[in-house]
Image 1: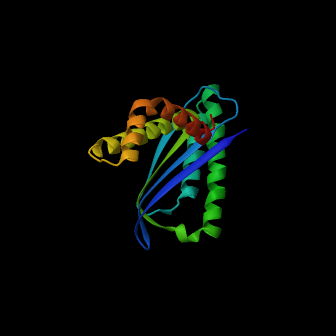
Image 2: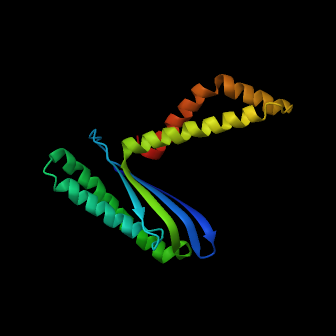
Image 3: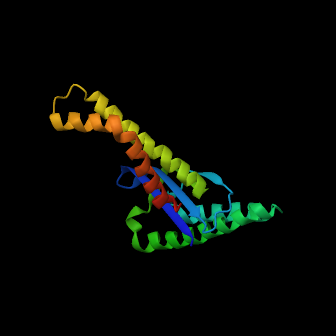
Length: 178
């Protein structure tokens, strides 16, 4: 089984322009090879969003580099990047035909192409950062005398870390194909 996950966030500037676009494309092959790869792509400001066709071209070029490396281990990564290329092109066609309202100019656009190791790492970092934000909100509201909120914050601070870890593991395994 192959799992390809695509996540894009768009920040609107006005009715015709996005201020920013950030995409993460994660490829998780069935038999994990133990290889890891992470590529960062920054687009010039003239792109329209979502720029999946350009992302597909980048994935193809990265795949070529790995394939031509002469290293059989790295050549395995090329297959994942070729899959990303194919799926990016399919998605670009879908957006063009059915989601044209999202096809706008983007001022700042970037993307990560990654395998499942990096996806899992970033997912856990984001998940624990969310926990830290919730704890900070509880501490900031420490003077609040709302009984239920105070009790909820107490339990979150006392017991939450362990349960949040399980929650993060489940969410990240589902998100990253682990």
